[in-house]
Structure formats: structure tokens, C-alpha cells
Image (tube, rainbow, N blue to C red; front, side, top):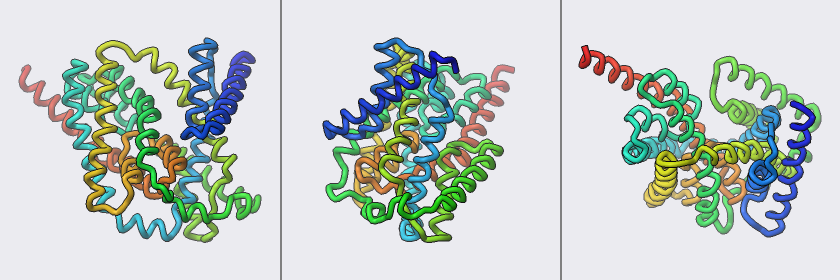
Length: 360
């Protein structure tokens, strides 16, 4: 990066801290999530500065958030999750069915073909859907890319407010609140061991091209740490705030650039798709809540059609059960990666062969 880019990065970082402190002082929700987003929009849209935020910083923020998620997976929590397997599968399947229904309307509004609509609407597998769009000649990769990436705008606006409305009065993080802080539990040697473990798992995941490795690598390492040592801890508040800032600046920059492409019929279709997905998910979990004792907030965040990193940030601020919520999202990643994506690929190949036979 040039000296100008370094200065612009420091400007957006400084404004992110200032905006976050203002929101915190005003007792508004998610100050360290919305502060960096507002700062990024202000710097790019108002000050007209070009910001090239270092990718390694945003990835470091994701890794720290992954550590925080991993700390919530204690033995008691994992036992509870094992008893909740039916709901985890049910939510993933119902969300997929909801996505297929929404894709019908999206297809008509955006005037795109079935392949483009299907790849645009499935949540939680951005990289996989883009790869499939590149491989399928009938799919419009530009529409798929814009639709999938634009979802983040609706997730960071709608999901926090819905979650805040349904949040538990007494919170659901009682076990985490009784944990000691990282600085109270770990020695420098312990931190080095955990850090080395994360590096090894991260490199292995990168080698096999596994998605969301920045989150999953620290989660897996911390689960093993908790199971083996039973020395559970939670990250200090300043560390969590710092992780949110350096990650959400990148999200804010993405949103600033996406708004420039958000035009015309495709913008209406994207808005329809994401609003219907989010509120359809809310209705779905309200029905599931009739036979599931988990709170509506926990169920909604577990099923919400967004990236695990953004959803977990909302959970941390609204007293959500981080372990439960992240377990649903981790299962969805595997569910889409190893079952749904190959199934869609087979369907597309079958349709291609059918079309070739009809034209010959």
C-alpha cells in the first residue's frame, strides 16, 4: 500500500473508534459493529477517500472472533447441542425450502433464469455458489455475485434490530458470564500453544480449500483446548471490541461499494429476496419455538440467512447463546458444502444433458 492508503486506513480506524464510542455512550445496539460501518461509509461517501483496508487485519479480527466462539463450547454446552440435533437439521432444511420458494419470485422480478435465481438465493455458501455459477454456462455470475454479496447490507441492518426486539431479558450467556477472562487464565506459553494450533489447522484448511477457515480453525482448536484442559475462559471486552472494529471496517467498505451497484430491477429483486428471507426465517422460528424450548432470539440467530461472523456479533450483544447459534451455522456450512452444492450441481448437469438432447 502507498503512504496515502496508510493514512486513509488510519483515518477510517480512528473514526471507527470515535463512532463506536459515541454509539456506546448513547447506549445504542452493537456500537463496535455499526461504528466501523458508519465510519467506512463516511470516509468513502462523504470524504471521498479511497480506502484499501489490509486483508490480514480483517482476517485477524475474524480469527479473534473465532476464538471467542470456540471458548463458548464447554463440555456442558456440547452435551446440550448433541441433544438438539433434530432442530439443527430441521432448521437447515426448512431454510433451504424457504430459499427455493423465495427464488421463484426473485426469478420473475429480476427476469433471470432458474439457475441464476437458485444460486443467488441460497444463503451461507457465497464462495461455493460463485464457483458453481462460473461452471454453469446458463447462470449469470454477475447477478449471483451481486445478490450474494449484497445480502450483508440487509443482514447488518435487519437482523440486529429483530434480535434486539426478541432478546432475553435475563440473557442466555450465564455460563460465559461466569468464565474468567483470558488475561486471568492463560499464561504466555498457553497463548503460544493455542496460536500455534490455530496456525496449523488454518494452514491445513487452506490447503484443502475449506471455506470460512478464519472462523472454523480457532473454533476447532478452542473446542479441543476446552475438552482437554477444562480451563475455560472468555476474551476480555477490549479484545472483542478490537476484533469487531478491524473486521467490520472491511464489511463497511464492502457495503459502501455495493450501494453503487444497487440499481434498477435487480436492486428491487435483491431487496425482495433478502427481506423475505429474513422475515420468513423469523416466522419459521416462531413456529419452531412452539415445540423447542430455546428462545426466539437464539432460534432466529441460529437460522438467520447471514454469515456466521456477523450473526455471532449480534448474539454477543443481545445475550444470545453463542455456542448454540454457531453450531447451527457450522452445520449449515457442511450441509450446503457436502450435500446441497453437489446435489445442485447434479441437477444442473442433468438439465444441460436434457437441453442438449432437445436441441439435437
